[in-house]
Image (cartoon, rainbow, N blue to C red):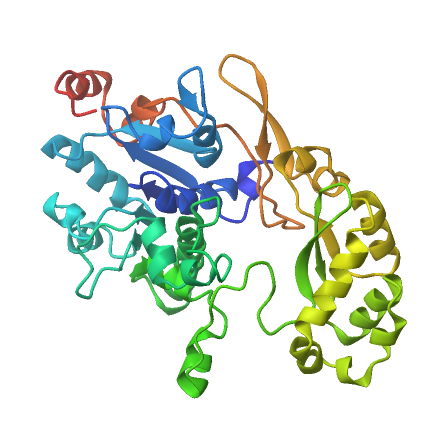
Length: 399
């Protein structure tokens, strides 16, 4: 669609982030129409360019994480480089950064300086532990946020050490909170006048905010939630079960009527009508018995048959999808969650689709992650730099 029709069209974002949290937040804004100018070091740029699987020397993740962004190389340690950033900020709506607190201040690009150049600026600051507190200056990645925020403590099986999810989920959660907070700050500015503000997102707090009922349960009952493997603590039945052909199926039948349908499907009418199992509390008290019954039935079924029978009974169930499953799944395809784009050499490749789905003003991919510094000359020309000035900046390694 035309970028001008996207919901964030007209917003200008200066991204000073690297790797995951800051760039993911900026990516979401770029997908929905914001002009995102990504500032990168002339010396190699964002390290994400070299992370995970590389194609022709560039990360495939990079092409997704930086879609719709403009890459401008600037040496922030050079006074002329900082001047470029200040000029960009003066006409921007949002700045996104995920440096360790204090780094931008040492460069002369802290909040006080940027807001003086642009009083309406909204600045999203993502860091391990936030901009204040005794741990503010410590380095912190998603792994630390997941650990301190409580996620890793409850992840895994009770007889084994805590485990992590297979992705950097803490960074991504922080990015989502960052986008929400930034849009709130923009809304406040629109309603209350032209002043901007700082949106301060700590990775550990972003994870902590997702931790359901941990706080009140500990406060009122002294209850510490522990690792419980694949079951949903206190909610029964909700578990993963192994099929006859060695596949894994997740079944969630914790609604009262759904539970009865599940029991009828697996041939356990006695459990379906048992008055002790008519509500969740009763079912959770007999958790082991119920899971043994479901395990026994699933073990007699191939994955396809189990899912078909559960679907017919309107019992929520799913295979545990690999990426290979997703590529062939009709639901993913129907909702355009697997997009096709082209790499710089023309090779076709798949990318994840865009979330959320807006009915009137959806996001879209306009281009994939750019080459390092691809838009430097274009953006500097828009700031009033002529060709000779740009060449001088390049000769002094400022850009």
